[in-house]
Image 1 (cartoon, rainbow, N blue to C red):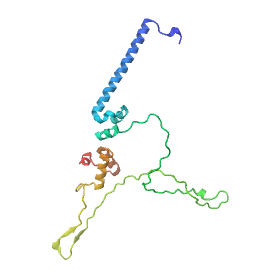
Image 2 (cartoon, rainbow, N blue to C red):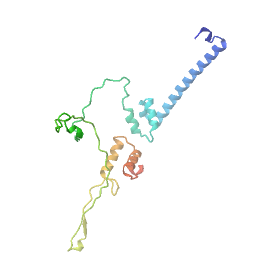
Image 3 (cartoon, rainbow, N blue to C red):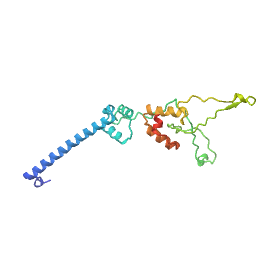
Image 4 (cartoon, rainbow, N blue to C red):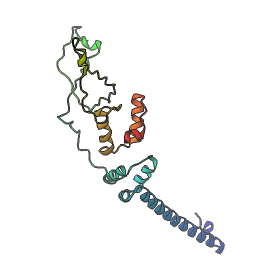
Length: 214
């Protein structure tokens, strides 16, 4: 830039100073608004959210029906590291998990030697492990209670096998479904409205949040 292009007149200098002041004022206003927004979010999500940084609070705004338990759990998470640490190497999978083997056979053209045309033989396996999961399988448990009666003594009436103890008497959900619901809510912090959506998606059965809460 040549010296002649640098504004030097009093009017130009005054305009530059005005724009500089307006920019500084805009930055201060943005900081004030950000502080107000943070205080509003903390007030909305409770004292547990005071430990959250701004990015976490913004993510909570995108989640509908966030519970206080979820906010508390999020506040206990460690911040993401800023510096990239060296990779510790491939992690071994826990030994207590069951192993399900899947053997991959060679292609048909690999079963014949390309040199002499004779059949090749298996000499070993290249083995690798990956964590896998079997999705939850919902099914309807049909309970048939055996009924008995004496063909000779009608006055004795009919006897039926007793039902096992149920957490919810005459409910549509089995004990296992009730237990899973409680564990997911209080241990995994999975809100009931999400569990209701998952049940409807996987089973086609609409179970309201109020029913799950009961």
